[in-house]
Image 1 (cartoon, helix red, strand yellow):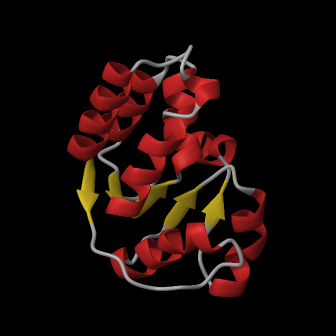
Image 2 (image 1 turned 135 degrees about the horizontal axis):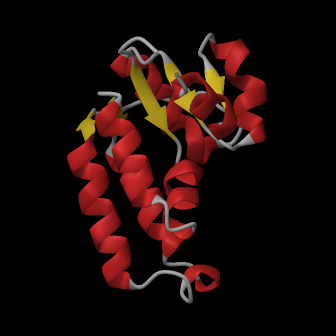
Length: 135
């Protein structure tokens, strides 16, 4: 995979964290020298989602804080501003994609995957992303 700008949606970060594979994600990013971008909205959403009642037995506040610190170290920060998707809370992802000139958005969100072609961006599932990284 050539060095392109990549966005990992909230559900990707959370999936790796809950499955106790966050270190694996960090290794994938570092060993492939991936240029992962993030923004305030993404960081806030991850933090808010992980603090929901259903996740409290899986991750502590300390786990969340540590995961956010690691995410910030692994990513390049981008400022955001626009409005695109039908699910308004995810608009920041399209803005992040366009502002950073990303090549790829990795997500498990079916709506985003369905709407990606409409906005001219490349969105793939986690499985497709991992398959692209295999030698």
